[in-house]
Length: 317
Image 1 (cartoon, helix red, strand yellow):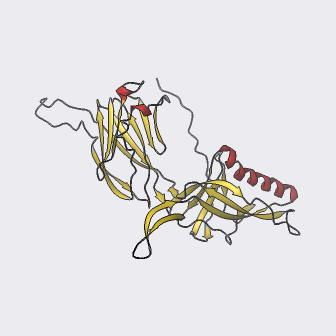
Image 2 (cartoon, helix red, strand yellow; image 1 turned 90 degrees about the horizontal axis):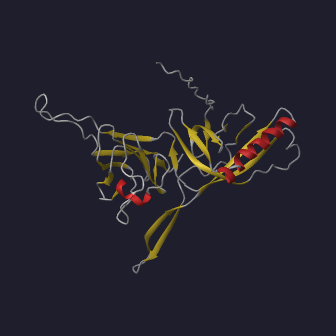
Image 3 (cartoon, one colour; image 1 turned 60 degrees about the vertical axis):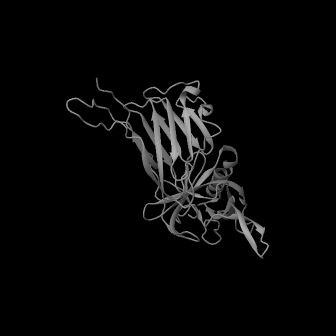
């Protein structure tokens, strides 16, 4: 019997025209509030848009350097710590009359300030070549009008400061690696042959970003034990399903392993972090460039799979 399903409707994403932005160049910028509503920031024909003069904080991440005096003079760098960044974002808001202006002003104020109650918004930078980067932002201060004669009637401007707990920009497109166990065949039937039943194993993962990324792993059963090794450092971690209340992964069941923050959840939401081989477990990151890694599933059968997902991180927009 055919199955009738509802048509899939993809929400239309408004096209934002690119303009020249300090520290960025020619790009389109959109603010996405915690509800997912998109607010174009570079459409000069809209009722609000960013003022290029005064924009800052879109360049390289800020760092704090820790150094020790050297007996022969000078200092020696001991530690480098990335710091949260602040983005200064001047905005012009207008309306055809005072009522329309007030509605726009209030709506944008809420779109930014709700990040303090509902989680971060995102500032997205899209390039004409189709690439894009984004950064999570929280409202800090600045939604105040100029307070000058003629402002606050049909137009006004605000200089907003957005705070970013992670100073790095993320690629808008996730990078994925999929490995799946194939169907085995009898070695002697109909004649001696070699089966590709173990597609999982050694592979090379490419991080095109500027800094380390902390990937997420989704494992699909059947499997009883799961090990992941970063070959250049030897760092590894193993999830033994026998050490969890869940037990072995059956066909179609999944477990998700997050490396930052450290978290292990079954498809039903069970907390399985106790199944990791603590204290030896190292939930490792992927450095920039190519990294050799190995996936090992014990108890794997046809359909067992590993999906690795990460977003490259960049210094600048």
